[in-house]
Length: 134
Image 1: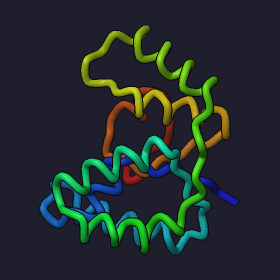
Image 2: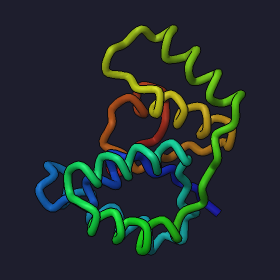
Image 3: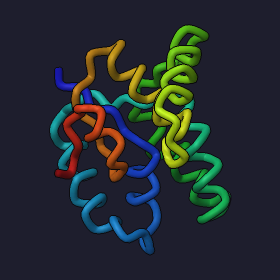
């Protein structure tokens, strides 16, 4: 079964009708759901998504995310070794716009041999992952 990692940028674009990528995200999300792929996210992605969605869209949007989207996901729980590797990668990269959550996502994807990611964040392509939509 194909696995696809889901990034916060994709969740935000799907949920926020005012997001610049909303129509593209909505179309890609529909295709992903019908593809039968296993949808993967880390607990760090959930924390980041909850914080941003709550701030931008409110608690009703959080409730919809929790009830309608989270049950579709296979959650990868970040352990100390992944967190440490991601922290080292972040510090070595020395880039202001690269986040710890991004680096954790890269580590999770590499450890799980996941090559595809639903995202609008260019950092994933820079790391050699296949981004959806293209």
